[in-house]
Image (cartoon, rainbow, N blue to C red; front, side):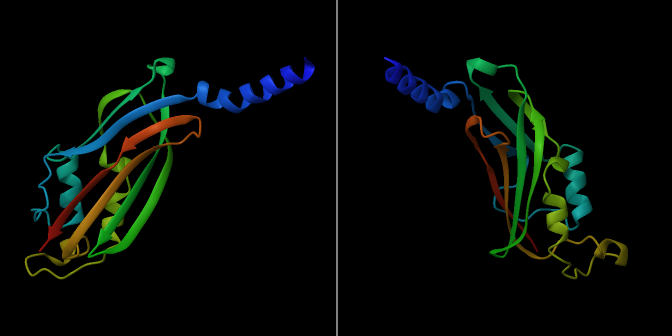
Amino acid sequence: MKTLKIIFFLILSLFSGNLFAQSVAGHVSISGFPSKSVIKESTVVDLFKSFKEGSYKINFSYKADKVNRRGVVLFDMKTTVVLNGKTIHKSSRGGWPWLPGDMYVPIEAFDMIPGLQKAGVTPIGKLSPKEMDMALAIGNYDITLEMVPSSQSVKGEIKPLVFSFSVK
């Protein structure tokens, strides 16, 4: 009988993490952004401004299970910037709190703008010397923005945002 209790306790302890784990499901998307085309912004500042003024919006939507529908979930905000097939920036910011539901994510939550600045400058004749310091490099960009639960106890998946654009 004592052996049976020990075995039961071991089995329960192995599965209790999954029984009491919070689960989430959702996605990150973007609205207003031109799909696979040339963007109108020629500088990082102009692109940042387009996000801040609402021309482009990052949307985040997720649902939590019945255990913690109203609770805060911490997410790591992961950013990958690829220019002409080469990864030029990869970063993660940990522990951002979000409530379940639909919401907008400020561009500052991700490191996309600093990542684009790392691409360097490609001279464009129309820019002043001051603007040239912040010019987007000419080429094809692939951006991946991910929201990954920070805690190992949170199960599920948030579908990342993957989008592309060109600067000419």
